[in-house]
Each structure stands twice: as C-alpha cells, then as structure tokens.
Length: 62
Image 1 (tube, helix red, strand yellow):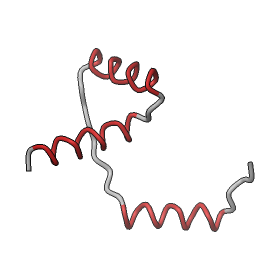
Image 2 (image 1 turned 180 degrees about the vertical axis):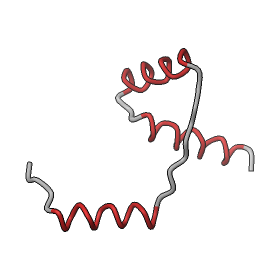
Image 3 (image 1 turned 90 degrees about the vertical axis):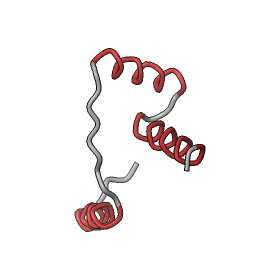
Image 4 (image 1 turned 60 degrees about the vertical axis):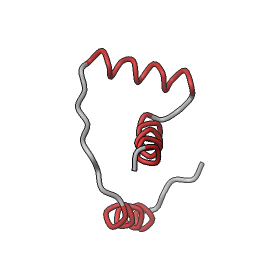
C-alpha cells in the first residue's frame, strides 16, 4: 500500500472539513460495549452502523 503524500493528506483533510460534520455521541459503557461487539460480529464500522440506523429511523418516521 502506498503512503499518502503530504499534499494528498492536506486535500483529504480539506474535503472532510468542507463536507462532513462530526457529531459527538456519549453512551453508557455497557451500551458502547454492546455496540462494539455487535459491529465486530457483523463486520461493520460503528460510524457506518450508526449512520445507517439513523437514516432508517428517519425514513420510517418522517
């Protein structure tokens, strides 16, 4: 795998900064562990799983 150049890293950071907003989520340790275990078992990222769950909930309840 090729290492990213400094220019590519800077371009990636700029893109993320302009196109994404970070949302902080706090949850009890037990829930966080359950989420981590579930995602690991299903081979999902936590962020991807949470985004999909939010999207599905919003589509069901507009």
